[in-house]
Amino acid sequence: MVNNKTLLYEILPDLNLIIDSWFGDLTFEKVLNAKLEQIKDPRWNQSYHNISDIRNAEFVLDNAEARKIIEYTKSDKRWQYERKTAYITDNPNQVVFQKLLEINKSQEIPNQMESFSTLKGALDYLLIESSEMDRIGDIIRKLSI
Image (cartoon, rainbow, N blue to C red; front, side, top):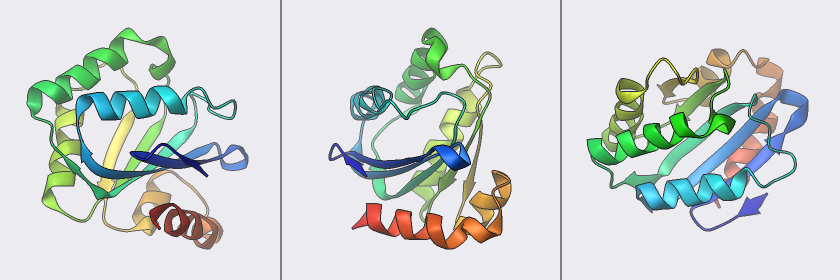
């Protein structure tokens, strides 16, 4: 587990998966800085799928800031790899954030993204075997403490 106060994450190379847990009020700068730190991890791989638990975060981004995230992603080749991100949400603010990213995303960014209210939905979307649910659920719980 890696902790930078805004983002806790675990990387599971055996599943080609990154599990993120986000915390607090998130701005463009906080999201960008957290992800720039994450990609320094030697286990990070641009092709890994992502489960992003955003239930402990509040996004204080408007549409313009969501576009800034997209513009940055378009300008940095490390993010332009085909993969899926499953957002785990539990309130409308979190779903709106994910939808802002999805709406503003261009064809140049092959990352597919969807919101889910359950881990099972996220795992199904990422085509991860249900036998991994307990393991991944335990990691998400540990990251959320």
